[in-house]
Image 1 (tube, rainbow, N blue to C red):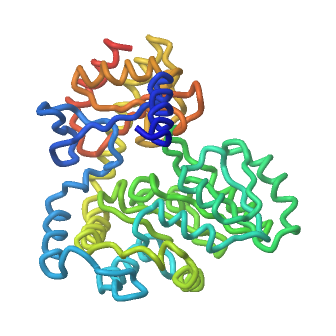
Image 2 (cartoon, helix red, strand yellow):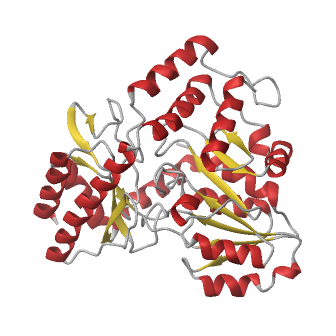
Image 3 (cartoon, rainbow, N blue to C red):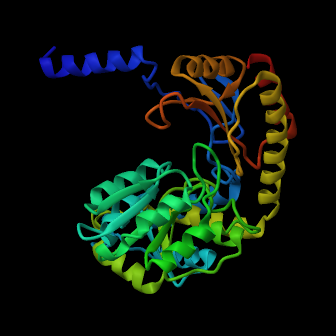
Length: 391
């Protein structure tokens, strides 16, 4: 083996010794509350398929029909020959859903953040971002070349202090997750929007874990907080969580969307989403409106699971972050303990992978449980019983 590959093996060995080595489990079934892994059925409590739409019969049927009609690929980026009627239909639908003038669809949520942030700000501009933002937001901020400042998690006082220097820059952008994916808490969007308006900045909120979840009808953070769209607000989101499909989007003013069509490199240079995926997303949004009981079932299951988890935490002195969403973590501390607990859960029939650095900070390892609308009461009780026995 050459030196270059020997060095890679050494680094892999180091990851393994630190409890940071990753392996993949292969799911052999659809993404339901119960999945098949290595020939056995286990309960899935780690999926972002919150509303159970990834395997909804109507979503599947619509995707298949679109594939039969239009084929399996768009064949090019949208600026070449990959702009199809379904792309524009989905953009109209998501703009309507989010209450904005327009929207633009990207090939993934990660590619949305990687393309949009550098398109909006650059070397003469300022970004201020929450410390616990998703990796895609952090990477987009770094790629932009803008002055990049981080404020402690949801610390409005520190954010305001950083914005006091706004006049030194041409443009300013506040970046935050709406729902933080590891703790399940919600950003203070009303206060952030007020600061954006006061300091003439944009507020870009990543609605990946809020779209389809927050608000009376699942519209997201604005509906949750009873806010109206603002020219200072940029709504980013994905179709790959509660909507059960794939892809990312930005919803906002017509000017913003036209600007991104002409400046966002990940929009220019990525082959556009295939017809089957687009049709699935359109149908999923329709089902969110048509089947409000799904959202009701989700929050009922969340309440059931959280109440049970609190009892587990109280009995075993297990720290539970103050989650406000279907993301419900158990803090487990160090790598080795977290891996052992995840493996024990899997042996007992519960699939919840260990979350370790760099996804979370050192010493903040966790088991990140997520609840779906399609979990049954019996499945939730079974999971809670196993937790009580092994924690």
